[in-house]
Length: 547
Image (cartoon, rainbow, N blue to C red; front, side, top):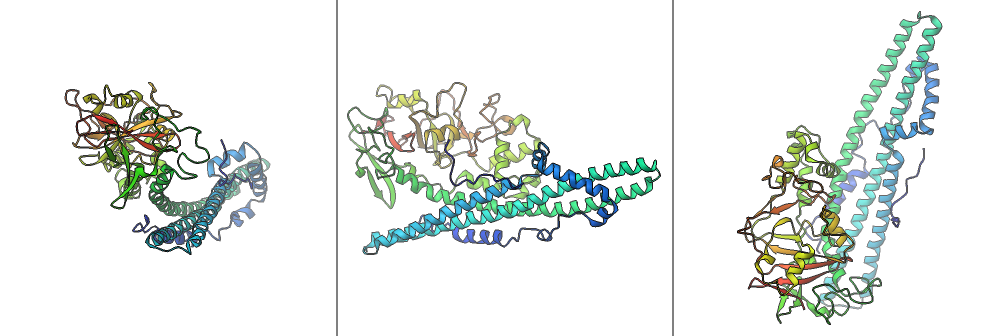
């Protein structure tokens, strides 16, 4: 796998944006990190030397401790064990360097966006002015993202120092205790036990000195890291919001037939990719021969117009660039994770996003009752889609062929929607075959989906009835229909992936299944991220293929 040039190695040192308020929020968080207000008082001038009085009372133990400290710092496996216990400051420093590289790259991109505006100095008109405003706004937000990354780097740099403080404290404490034990044993042996009262005083002084220093400093360290974590989590939320704004724009560019984007770039195949939706002898939709007049602007929104095999036309409702991702499950999850009272109700320390991923991917049977209750409360904040909500379902090859085959396209069975579904906005970022496979965990025992398939089909439809439910086991608040299912099914309301996508189900009786309604769209997602309409459900209840 090719290494990411932005990721620093670990060095061992022994207008779519308007109304989002990202710039204002980011500026406050950057300031909060860079002024180091999150660092507990007393840490900045903290001395790593242990109590000099205790050292003076036991010079032999201190000498032995110095040797033990050197051994733990330089020789394996003791060094590895110490790093595992206290954390690796060098690794945290590499995170800081990586964020610094990201900041530099974003700053360069923002400068380039501003530079190209000068190419339009000789142009004027309403369209040019609109473009200038968009380009300047985009440049400002990219530059702001660079500042956020720089703040992350600063925070990680300070955090690496804090980790080093913990590392050195623990190392010195272990070395001092072991050194003192050896020294005390020598004194008792030489005096035949006569020095026992003096040794007891030395031991008490040592324990008191170490305990006081460790308690005070460790409390400050934990509070500082906790404060930094809160600010970093907020910055992470800003990055996700920024991605939600930019993502649809990038997907829009990728689907256009422009140099460097979509399937007309340098890596495009010599012949158009062709799938079951392509009639013999006609260009593949989205391929190089696909005319740009398939696109139109309606009420300011990007909508595609496709010709159908029945001679009609269809204006899309859920092309990738049309999906509104301004409010997704990720935003709700961030809000729940920021609610300390939620976790306090269940006697738990607050969870980070990584903590939630770990909990979601842990078998329900292995969770504590408190963890189950907290996870259930988070899932309950993401209710199942209802009437008017748009959902997406991945189709098996057999289901897709039933839609595309004229012999079965009008059969009621080809309209049935059942099983696992997601809200369309929650899975919109999964825009490649491999991304869909991993993000939705389609690696079942009876594998019908493979990450290296040329394409995968999905249906997007607006629900006409309240038929969906959160997909989970009965002891997590579910109906019990899925009790007994096994990995990769979680049974906790979420799919087993780092994406934290809520999973819903439609389970209607066979005698009265839920049938998708007119306007439902079936899309083909290709390996390179291109998406093209394959078929539409018409007003007669039959699927009509795209020409």
